[in-house]
Amino acid sequence: MSEKIDDAGDYVWKVLGTETVARTPYYDVARDRLRHPHGHELDYYVVRPHRMAVGIVPVGDDGRVLLVRQWRHPVQKLLWEIPAGAIEPGEDAPAAATRELREETGYAAGDIERLYRYHPTIGSSSQTFNLFVGQSLTRVGDYDPKEILAIRWFTRADVETLIDDGEMVDGMSVTALLVWLRKNV
Image 1 (cartoon, rainbow, N blue to C red):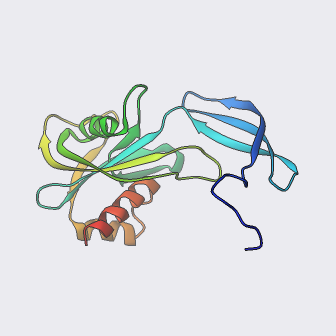
Image 2 (cartoon, rainbow, N blue to C red):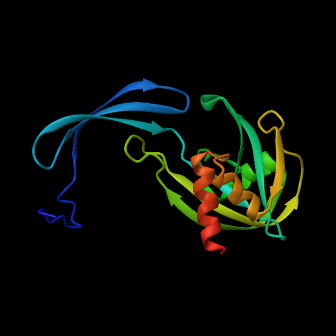
């Protein structure tokens, strides 16, 4: 590398101004006017979600994973995924993961552990995904049939096959399950 970049932030793209160009109930699109460290100015468009997201890998005492099947309109597909959703105002990520697990599967986890945290589309959005593993599961009710078509337990081999065969295409679910598989070899 020809340039030295230090941790003091000398390579920060300075925000000169921000304008919201679109609003939806779920996110805003902003145009940021920036000054690049090399001196030129540019416009950069950023999707800013109103709420961050959580996902949880529910693992039974026998090591099987509980997945949910739901329709995803943007891709016109019925998919198997991990339980996931938005963090509500005033709610922390572990509480949101607990709530989503109950709403989407009818199960509660006696133990929730942080798995991973990442930005799924870092070049265009400020979205953050917070992933958890839930264990010591107990059935406490039913899943929400308005959102979820079905729930099903999958073995480790089943999960690997879903990913290998390209049947699981949801980015949050693939990331969560690959990290979980890696940590549980």
